[in-house]
Each structure stands twice: as C-alpha cells, then as structure tokens.
Length: 366
Image 1 (cartoon, rainbow, N blue to C red):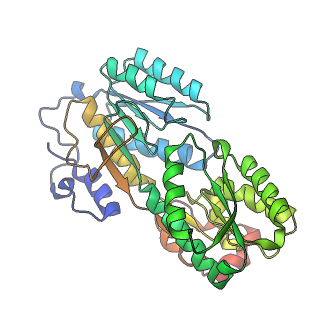
Image 2: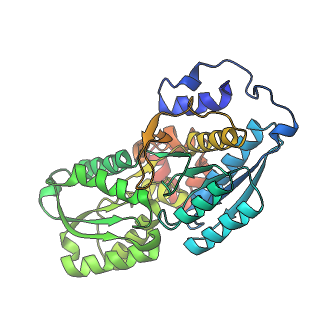
C-alpha cells in the first residue's frame, strides 16, 4: 500500500518509531488507482461526550481535516456526539448504518454496550475503528494513547511531588468511569507506581467521569480521613481535578496537596500555572486523530492498514486488534511553553488571564 507521507510523518514524529509508513516519499494524496469518485466516502464519527473540552475543540476538527486531506476534499464526515448516553450512541450508530456510511470511527460511551452496534455495522459491511477507547465487538482497528503508561506518568509525578510526605499521610485515588476501558489502564498504571510507596486512604471509580461526582467523592474522603491527613490526590483527568480542587478549597484545605490530571485542558493548564494543580498528562491529539482518519479512509476504500500499525491489542472480545498507540507527556509549570504553547494548543494570551499575569511572569510565560 502506498502511504500518504504527510499523515505518516505526523504519526511517526509523535511516536518516535520507525513504522513502515515513515519510509514513503510520495505525494500526500497518492492512492493506487484512485479516482475523484472513489474518494467520495462517508466516514461516521461518533464521540462520547462534550463535557471534556478536547472532543469538540480538537478531536472532531482534526479528524475532519485529515479526512478531507486524505480524500482530496471529496470525503464527508458524518458527526454525532452521544453526550455521555450509551443508548443515544447506539441509536446514532444505527442511523449511520442506515445512512450507509463507508466506515465508522467510534469513541464509545460504554465499551461493552457498544458491542451490539459494532456487530450491526459489521453485518452491514461497514468497518469500525475504535477511537481513544477500546470498544468491544468485531472492531477492525484501534487508536489511542498508551493508557497504562499514562497512569504510570501520573503516579510517578505524584510521588515526585510528595517526596518525603509520601510516608506521612494518605492519598485519595479518583479513577475514571468503569464503563471506559481506558480508566482501567490508567488505574493499573498508577497502582503499579504508587502501591507500596504511599497509603491509599480512599479510592473511587467516578461515575461518568463527571467533575461533580469527583467533588462529591472528594468531600466524602475528606470527611472520612480528615483534611489534614490527605497529602495528595491522584485524579485520572483534568475535569475531575477541577471538582477535586473545588472540594479541597471548600473544606479549607491549605496549602492544596498535589493533584494530578490528564488532557491538558485550558482550565487545568491555568490551575497548574496558578499552583493549584500539580500536573496533567498532555496528549498530542493530532497523531491520534490522523491515525484514526487514515485507518477509516483506507478501510472504506478497501485498502490495507498494516503500514501504520505499531501494536496489536486484545479486547475482551477480539484478539490482535491492529492498533496505533501514542505516548503522553507530563506537563507541569516547568514546561507549559514547550508543550501546549509551542504545539499551538493554547496561546499565551488564552492561558495568561489578568488574574494569572504574575504567575505567568514567574514561569516566563509572557
């Protein structure tokens, strides 16, 4: 299969791996035997929710851009957001099957519940790419981040922040939703680093990843443990970190203990600059989106995807799923500029509000 060098280069640069796709030097739009008519594919894109900023701001436009590039502007992305409702997402898949899309990219609300919908798509001859979360059912491909590695990065950062305090108190672990298979990986990676080195006073699997549920859980943990006994908080993502920090402030906890996160949301980056949140895991969405778009378009056109794959992953229902896994990067006050600012995710003016001007100047973010 002839690769599109521009897309392959984006993925390879982020992965720092020597994939087969990295060797091509052909035109970014080259396809064997392609015609203008042949590029007019419809790609269904189903994202899980809109509470997390990344999906509408990054994933959707990035995938749309890549599909347009790969299809010479002839391809169409049919979009739906389930707003954290698994039944809604199943109905959206049914609608896209009826609409005869040529391939589906699905970021599942509930990885188990979506399996029947994946089966329906496959029965209709529509290939399915699981995006960001490993959906169950007969999926054709998967792209995400290395979830256990993300958890390990978070756990290590928390231990580094705690230093000797790791022995003096307890931490609270705020994991993600059990309906999200990624949450299991984050949790496993974090435990691999934290177990035996710090006492976990309370641990929660947070329903639907909702910040308000994390707030409620954190309030309960402080009541049970005592606010002076909590030396750190493992939060699996930034949205929950916001709820956690609000609960800590409401309880009068000062100074705030180190709190982790993930996704590099603007509010989280601002909390990091302000010294309220210790870190987040910055995940470069562009290579993940590029991989999903490329696999979906290739599958829609009946082409092979082996050239971009860097791992084989097992789900509870499928073995050796062809996958692209992208590494994450720890983001703290020390590297805001060299990560999200340099990459164009957030501008200095977006981060550095009037309230944060002094804090930004302190870390050279001006």
